[in-house]
Image (cartoon, rainbow, N blue to C red):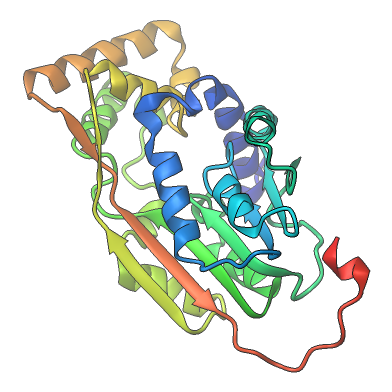
Length: 286
């Protein structure tokens, strides 16, 4: 398979289907925290229609559904069926009937132009090689006076534990090691602003917010690895080498007295200016 986009999709789908078993574990509370903070920045209104791409188990889709209420609609899409099942179960438990979790590829969803009051992408824009084109695609679906929200990782991703992880992976499986990850391109507010502008988005407000996730024990970091995109590397290593990496990383975390990892986030919100539009029909609201 030589198509970089196709490779990225397969990798993401496999990784997050496997990660579903740990995705909502307590050490990964940053998913929900960042999703909720993204929605807070959108100033959604009751009755609004929202698209959430790379939705996971609903970290941003569920708070959005609470805001728009039963008169509104949230369509939450992801490639990983196992995450979608968890999200739908959480929506049912919360009595949120206005949110629909469905399998979908954000590069080809097929919705018409100006279809949503808000489009949301939390920790997902970097899964495609051509992020600028994907930004343009998301922006296309935002209605006049609507908003686009893109959230990504800031500097020092999961430091200092992630650096220890990279060193351990490089030692046992250098073929799986990469010193550059796709999100590395957009770890500053300036880079995120440039990305959105290159995707044709104007009126962008970008905010960097420092944060951290406490580790009760070093084992919490391994739970984070199992419930995130690192799961793909773990599965590729095989059980024996994965255990070797686990012991090395956790031992070094304990020796260094690491009790938390950095979870710095960059939030970008853009408002689309009003422009003349053709009258909407009932079908537009489906």
